[in-house]
Image 1 (cartoon, helix red, strand yellow):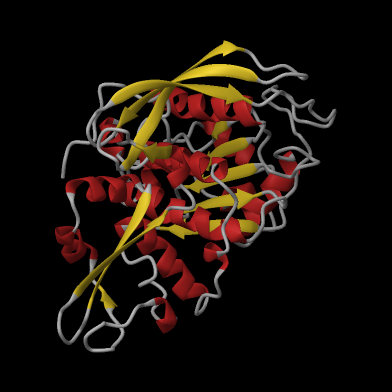
Image 2: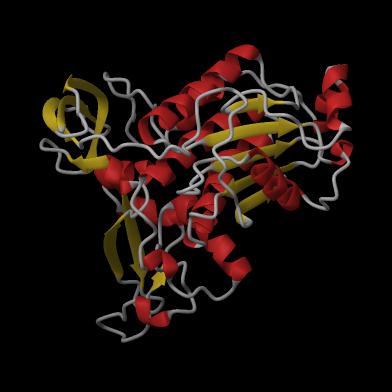
Length: 374
């Protein structure tokens, strides 16, 4: 595997190359340790019902994050809100029980907290709550009612692949940071496609498929094992071909294809005939993350990413703007610049949320989203 580092460092960081994030300080080796080190005022506050919102994007009631890590997490949340108007709020608690609400689960607590705070815009209902409970060893991504249920699988994927691996190592800072970056990318991508809305064999099978989809990035259609018509027949034996496991499949891919796979820009499907061992390779665009990358003019792989964008003409309410985008290939390190046209501004509704630390936009949730436990 080639090194995915590039001379040009992107503002958002490389989404799937989380190695650079592993230097975050590991905090609170156990969930019990987190609860024991909570400042007294936080415990007292937690016994009076839902906490009062103290910050517009990050409320660390659980005392999980060091100040430097909190600032590192707050930056992309504020930038994303400023750029899109979408409000993502991260909340950590020691546990939900001390709050003495009637909620019997982390899921119910997240929905009630979301609606109590009114996260997101009341018209669009596009707010998002990330709730981390150390004592319950659980994390929840709660979505506003403006998102279709098709987004639930995307949120499950973020939790399973970017949060839980770090949480299991008690590296809560890295898990929250990695998950936030992945969450932002899922929300800025195109809406869930028809492929993402195919009928799955069942809820548990869908969960497993979503997790495996990003973990290996291989066998996209092989994950739908019960949908035999999606797997081709061997041209020699006329039997359905079987997807190879990720470790075996990668041996049949080029270095550039493996880079695409790691970035998530293209899914590579490698199948083998169970009888004659014939190999067939297929590739499909990634409907969630692939929009971040374009074809590199040098190596021809879909590994070219915009790492910096400088506005030269600001957009107005009556005219579009223009920016210069600096691009860098994550495979061959090719760099170039291109002109990007910015859409004209749209006037916000008067009910849109303000930037104050205790502000609420009035958004609501009907319980959509995903959860994870470790």
